[in-house]
Amino acid sequence: MAYEYTKIANLAAYRKPAPHLYGRIAFLAKYGEQDLLLLKDETGSIYVFVTLSESDESLRFEMNQIVRIHRAMVKRLPLKNVDAVVGKMGCSIVVWPPNGSQEEPSAVSSKTWTRSKGDQDRINELSALKWGSGTMMTTADEMADYMIGKRDTKRIRDTVDKIWAEMQANFQIQLAKKTRGLFWTPQGAEVKTPQLEYEIVKKFFHPTRMSFKSFFQLVIDCPKCSEKKKVIKYTENGKAKWCPTCKETIQLVVGIRVPVNVLSGYKIFLTIPVKIIQTDALESCENDVIECFDRTADRETFGRAKKFQRSLQKFLNGCTIKNIEGIVVTRSIPLKTCIIYVNDCLISFE
Ligand SMILES: [Zn+2]
Image (cartoon, rainbow, N blue to C red; front, side, top):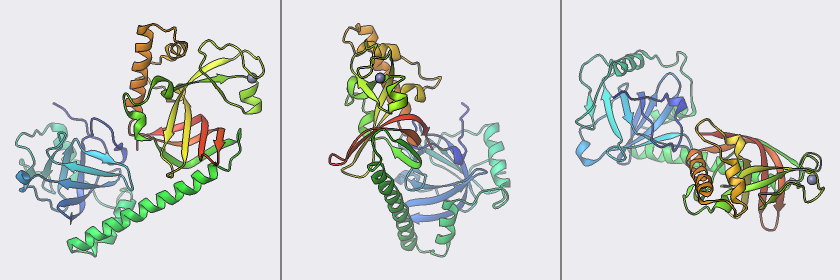
């Protein structure tokens, strides 16, 4: 079986199935019971926290070894990193010596392992990789440089924890500043948040906790009100043909209501038209969704719409939403709630 390997820079957080990756050890240390590795390839570097079970105690790491990890869970914050719990969820590790030329690996976490021609090519490429020649210096590299002076385990662990906590705090401060700023943006005003990156609240992905009507929204696209007055209105009437305000002929747009993580106590909901999220992998059922709002839809239609909801939930799982451009639909300072209609955004899996 041929495996597909993801380059370090392209590793996406929280994706399932978890990706496979290759890298060469550029830094290693003990982090409590775990091994902390900095793996590099041509595209970047990433920290890997390796947790071994008692049975793989023979797995020892050395500088410049080539490491192959199958089914590694990638996490996003505070700095993209890999959590490799060997033996869990299919996670396994094979380590080759630095020059990669030997037939046998230096260590394996599982008795059954394979090496294809593709693997040998990759091992050779990584063996030949020279640091500094076209390899980018990343935050992770800087962190490793900083830790090299701290050889004893406890100090390395403290250093990692400290840098991690600082990054996390910095992220929170940025989020707080920008979120509060949003609450001073008047209704109908345009929102452009190129630097803001939101994670969707966990509940959104739960298959049953989001009812059909708390997931989908029907937005009235009135050529007069939406464009000129910057007013966005919602409806639950799937047969609506005219704007309730100006009686103009309207279109209905199917959106999803996406609650995002902000400061505790604050709530931001994004209305994202499904058209923005559309990919080839998602078969759109906009008309079915519109029909379902009427309660006249038959079981089959409702089934298709529910399936569409589920595939959207699955597709968006693990993403963040950034580069939001939209308008403020409503906001309430006392309730600390803000709704934004999104005209454009970037769904990011990095
Ligand atoms: Zn109107």
